[in-house]
Image 1 (cartoon, rainbow, N blue to C red):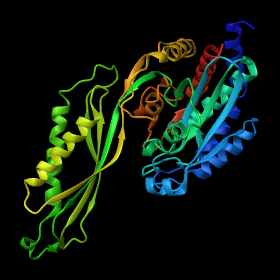
Image 2 (cartoon, one colour):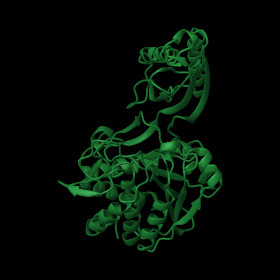
Image 3 (cartoon, rainbow, N blue to C red):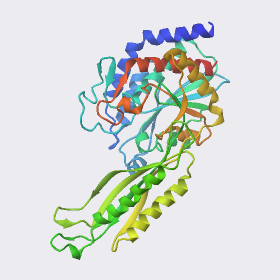
Image 4 (cartoon, rainbow, N blue to C red):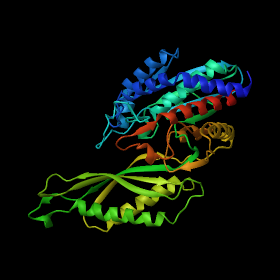
Length: 411
């Protein structure tokens, strides 16, 4: 069969099995994986069960319970499906994560109903990234049914801690030597191939003062006022960060966000302790060590300007930026070629301000890119917001692009 005939046959197989692919994704969305709390082993069990229907055996790699609990989650079982085709050729990993942030408020569809309406499937993780459990699985099924590669291998990596940084997902599989692919593709969206992304530093800051009765506030030290002073100093840095621009297309500048604050004991008590958690996004050009040191200096200096205030600073996450490896060119070229053919428009290679698990592969010298089923922007997908949704035609098209790209890469 000629290559062009292969592409047409791959497309036809995916069209013929698309209703089955949609049902597969619905089954995955209907098993909640809210993280936190992060009890994700049941979803891995269900995924493995569904994969057996296709003749696939999923290796179940359970992370030790003590490690998971220390990490702040409840259970993690990562899956590897190995599909060897013959000696020689590359081993290509396809990675998607099953953990998601909790649904939150404001939904007009059941967040775990996987309802289809007006050509879109609604539900938490329909776009990020259970959709690519489906696109990757059905791309491999199409590849094996049609192209029948005779060398190389494909591995499906379905992992469960991306929302916590990936260290007990892909990071754990790689560190334990359970996999070492030559190339990898991670879950993404359909209208761009991502070759670089931001880094992320997350920290927990506890501000200590001294509790007192609100009737005699002068006998205490208000930790909340101290925290406000520190927060103002941190937020002032965002104006400075806007002056620092990245040379990577798709990435603009560093920024800082405080996403959680808690503290105090009652309305009539001067708060003695306040905690907040911050998220500092780092552009690829920044040095993470210098960024963390600068944040610590700002916090400590601001705390020192308020009598009786002390701080504890704890790093929660340090995710390095992803920078392109030279070896990713075959991935980029194959995906761009077939995305243009399937979508009818050029698909740019860009960076993204998100951070992902791909960095964990790239840090070990494994070239990787981000591509999968989804719209043009995170905003359109409603990822991490109410009514997350996936246009089913984007799922169909992405599956075709990935199957065609694998066909080329394993030829």
